[in-house]
Length: 472
Image (cartoon, rainbow, N blue to C red; front, side, top):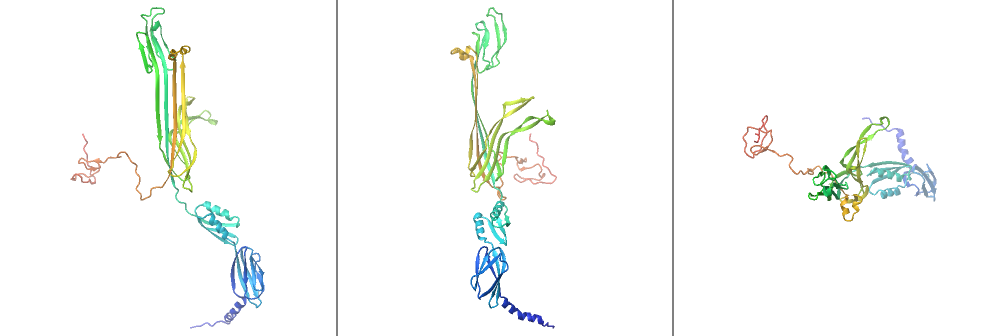
């Protein structure tokens, strides 16, 4: 076995190492916050002091054994102290930024976020997990006055699933119509030897068909024939007096109610809309190189709703709601080049509201009240007292419609995987099971040729079909 003897140089190093360590002294580490001072109590009288970087740490000898250090800049520096006995000590001074006020500011600003602050020399770093990108941007904005170099290592956690908002809307339109008509047409079939009629022409009058006789002449054999185009609603005829009258005396009242209950679902902050109605064609005249060409565009009409909900931190819903009801108005349409373009009667509301889930609000007061009156009279005869009413006619139409919109928002959750699925509630069974001749339910592709008792289930058999006889 070979044993290597230590060399002479290794022995000299082992002997001198304790002596060098005794002369140089130990190395201590001191951490100081920027802008603060510390005092070093040296065990012996100090003869000399030196610092590697006065811009980071500076010193002032207070007494023969006390040294005052000032942290002037962020970084590290070495301080060497010589004692009068020849002993020297090394101090590694690390000056750090004062991060505690910044940490407190971040905790107060974002109490529900996990943000850690780290510093290295003249740079600051943010670490942790935050709820949104807006928190990251605001945190970086707060640290800009503190340091020029700010690094963000914040991680935004995955957002939760957006809540679904269900909007229950009810449109109720009440339409009331009232008409009042009055008019008299007088017909003489030969009274006073004079066939004729008196009418204001507002309501259809009779028309003479045949008049036989000579004027002047005896009226005893004169025959006159009138054709009634509209007997109105009261007709009276006296053959002995040769006098007839048609009277229009009518009052009508109508009531119409239209109710729609659409439901619309959307995510938080997303706009949604629906339309229940249709489209009508509108011809459009082209210009430019296609001057004179006519194209057709379609315009929508019906019941429309547009809304954009937003869920607030108070668990309330802010909503922009725009309900609209439009109908085709042929009375105010226009005709251009043979095309009839109808007008639209539209009622629209735009509103911004805030309410809690399940609460409702009503938009009312959308009233359309119209009155149309037409009078007709025969000059002179209509001015006769009392009898003048027989020579006047009147047609009065009133229409009053009112639209009411009721809106109820709700926050809904999707059905979980293990929950029973929802099915439509049908008023009747969709398909009835086919009954076999013996009363057993089955299908057309069932086993044949096998004896079967009543109530026994039918089993399928390959290449076998049961023929059910037709019912006579």
